[in-house]
View 1 (cartoon, rainbow, N blue to C red):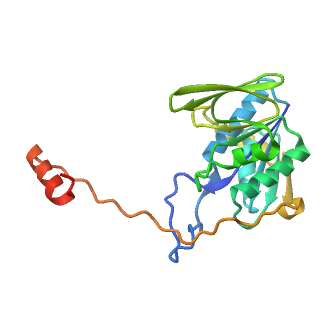
View 2: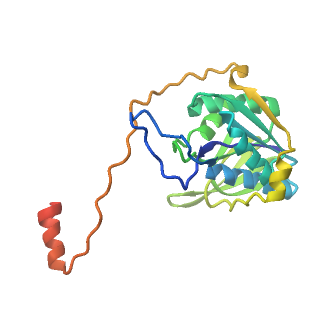
View 3: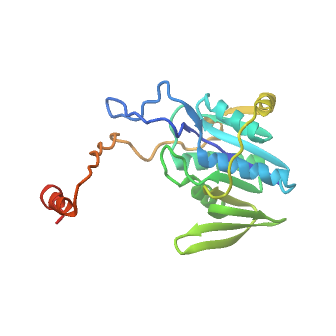
Length: 249
């Protein structure tokens, strides 16, 4: 069984985001980039399945600039067997990404595609669902537990009223939740080994996919700064401030 794991290069979650002065987007100059945390969980789950003997090969794929090679090397260091980079200079919307992934699925013929449920840069939570729709495959989103059998996969997913368990016939699409696993750290020996693993580069234009954007961002702005909280000496002072300053009473 082959598993395809799409991974995305995003601003590291520890970095404080800065908006460009002209409001045209996020300032990425000299900013640390890393793999999307939800995608790390997807890679970990795929590697665990291979270590358990359920999966024979894990293929990581990324769509983005040339620098996304670093993200794929991280996936290889975590245990992926080989990687595919689809280079695209423009920022692609989820539908365009899903169309490119559909093309890769057609070539690679995986039985499972495991993605992070969303990327922390745009929080769209769309690519996995769109890919499932384009392929006509079953989907198990927000997976907190995964059990793969010979021809099916059982997915536990947290919902508002508890835990929902669904069984999907393979091939299928899974998107990962934070509760699924704890991603491993890439050790130095594995980082060195990753440099020798296959990484193929292809251009997005090769696939003949319509990548035209459907959405235009008019402006980007940082959230307003919150006022610092204060301490009050008594309930009476609290009520007075709520009444006269906040206007909520």
